[in-house]
Amino acid sequence: MALVYSPEPEFFMQDPPAEWVALARSQGGGADNFSPYVYPPLWAALLAPIAKNLTAIGFFNLLTLLNVASTVIGVHLSYRLLSPKKIGFTLWSLVSIGLLQFSVIGHLAIELGQPQVFITVLVLASFWALQSGRARLAGAILGFAAALKIAPGYLAIIFIMERRWRALAMFFAVGAALAGLSLLLTGPDLHREFWLRLQDLDSKVLISRINLSFESVLLQIQNGIQGAQSWAFYQPQIQDKPEWVFWVNKMVLLVGLWVAYVSTRHLPAGPRIWFRLQLVFLITLIASPLAWTHYLYLTLLLLPGLLVVANVRFASLFLLGFWTAFSTNLYWVVYPLSYGGTSIVFRGFVVVLALLGVLIWLAIRRGQRAG
Image: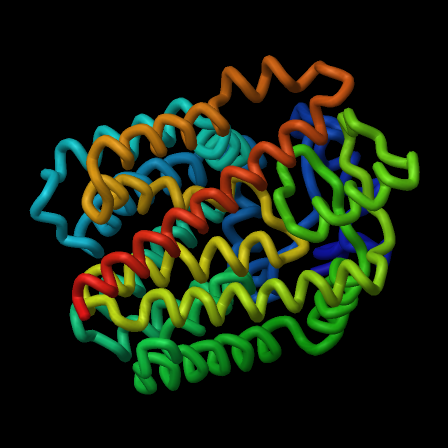
């Protein structure tokens, strides 16, 4: 299990270890063809036997097949979560696939072989189970998803909003069981290494064209005021996090979650979980240090629901605007420009804020009608 994590203490390494470079070159790659492992130690242990018997390309191809299959399942689950009578599954599927196929969100997720696609399906399966009255199953699935990546764990807040205590208990039980298994298989040292990298991540701000975090936006504004902002940043930049950025971000997170709860509390059970999943996911995403654009895969799978919860004309125009903002063509048109980096980040961030605003407005309006 040597060199599971980069020997450098930083979360994002600047110079990969010589052993990693040699391995990449032996399989036809180079030092710029891979990224460090940043997931919990358990999965390194469980995937090690597979990795020994597959080349990197073979593993990536296998993951691509998994992601394509996950996408098909995800479209079905997102439809079942809302169970709309207003539109059929065919239209829902066409909108979903269209958004994924022609947006930089879908392109990055599949092209980079992101496990986020599979995790998105687990999240959808969890809340479909919750919607279906299978609280324990919902908690177990979300606990498994959070063990793969920490971020889905924030969605357990919805269990609290819904007062589904059995789901919450099962979420913690599965998480604790997998944490115990991880310690048993890999020992405490790798977990210490993982924890150090999480601490490093929380003390830094990553400025990247595909990171839509609120912290990144705040720091770019500060840098711009001080005349220290690079507007292109073709390569990611890692900067220390000012204390004021940390506290403003945490305050916005708490206020956002409170608004998500208050705006949805009068909704009927059916659409309420769909609204809460959208809102809590988007709020916790932009409040996290790494709000990668391709993490919006879940949002794209749920977005056809706007055609159900809103006026069809308004929803269609908003979907068109959302797709335009994240379209692959627009991304590559802006990419080479001297101000391309900041433009891409701010445009994506503003569109996410617009979506949050629309969802909150729709939730309040539907709640008033239901009341």
